[in-house]
Length: 148
Image 1 (cartoon, rainbow, N blue to C red):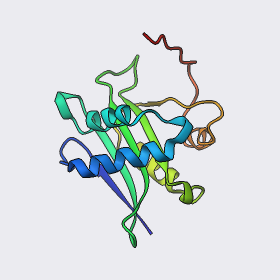
Image 2 (cartoon, helix red, strand yellow):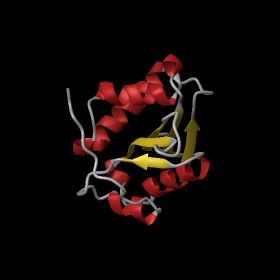
Image 3 (cartoon, helix red, strand yellow):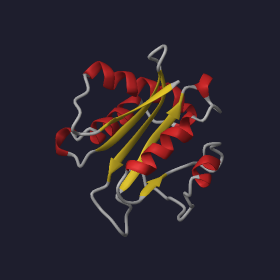
C-alpha cells in the first residue's frame, strides 16, 4: 500500500529529508534528469526557500517499508495566462516499482490539488509521455533554449 504525502512552503523538511528526495530523483530520473544541485534548487524553490513563490512536493511512500516509491516537484511560476501558473519540474518513480500506477497516482493528486494550469517538459522518447497525454496534457510548443 502506498501513502501520498504533500509538502509545500507551510511544511518544514529537515535537510536530511531534502537530501533524500534529491538523491531519489537524481537516481531515478536517469537520462531524463539533471545534476543533483539543480534538483535541489527546484526542491528548495517548491518549499518557498529564499522567498521563492513556492509550489509543492508530492511523495509516494510504501506503508510497510517507509521507502520512497515516487517523488514529484512542482514550482509556482508566479505568472498566469501566457505562462501556466505551475511547472511540473520533476517526477520519478522507483525503478523497481514502475508500471504499478504510482506515477499516475502522484500525477492525479498533483492535478487535483494544484490551482491553475500546469506545464511540463517531456522528451519525445520518454515513456512517461503517454501517461501525461492520457491525463490530458497536450503538446503546445517545441521548446528551444539558448545556453549561455
